[in-house]
Image 1: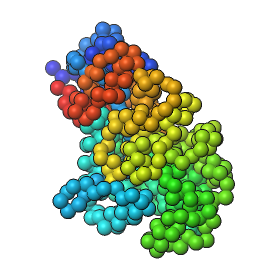
Image 2: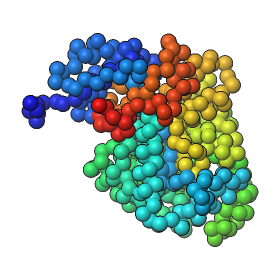
Image 3: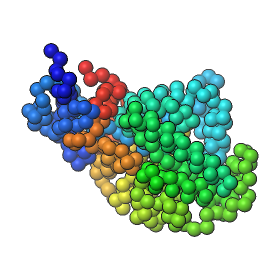
Image 4: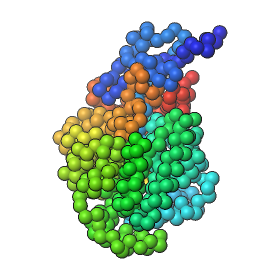
Length: 434
């Protein structure tokens, strides 16, 4: 007999282990889910006792239930770049050459391909246990209406010369409006604003987009300090960005002589440095500037594998961890990395750490970066499994181990092949709950 329509319908998922949040693990554990939210999370016996009798009960022996992973920085409409035989092409040694490759791809792509790329990338993300993403909006905004991931989608603005600022800001406003309309029918997605980078967004546009974010109470996302070419351009207007990138796209930036002050001061004067600002990459920032940006309200996303692929350097994972600065992890696009695995990003960040934190404790902190801190950086709910939180979680093979040793094993042993199920808003988005 079916329950009455007004009776809550839900399920209890039980496993050998439950990570409710990074500091709270139950063995065995369970989570009760109803109406897309967590109702109960804790010891298996307690949850089974308290859960409504009509809830479906699903058991996953030999598995661990984890908060869904958060890929805090991605471009899901950018595909893997391949040759005529379908083999991935190498990332060029020059970062400017890679940017120009992306420009050529975007200009030459069939309009229908953007939605196809997004759909395939979203499925891949889910297969790794990812439930939420920070997405830089691609050309096809309509593709996000059916997004199966919880997502903060940042409408991107690009325009360096002062005379284009009004037009570009208008297009970002329209993109934010469209994303807001899409979120009315798909509440998994929320809009944000992204001034692309400081070398592609001039000061006039930067101020306009900062004002837009403040006036709409939206988070903002900025690619920052990713490459040495970027830092050379911001210093005095020189380097490959002025000599190669802009001439290749028919733009003259010979008038630019650098930003003229430290990056934290520049962002503060533009009105962008505030709570809700997410800075991505952060490879070439000195520690004093990282600290100043954090004090100004910024959060950070690191993309270790993308930075390595481009030869752009290594983010200062040691300082972020040892100074207690929360940070998230992102994969960037499939044009930079071989897959959309947050597990691989965790392992890459782990290899970059050279501080005194013990390895098992470091792995716990990096798992927090890929869950709780990622959700906070995007201004999204989730990252933990607690009553009232969204029912976004993944079921993976239990790697074994006790205490922090469990997190070390989790980081070392988990990949796509270990992900049994990914749940977003209470619904199976990858795998089967049967």
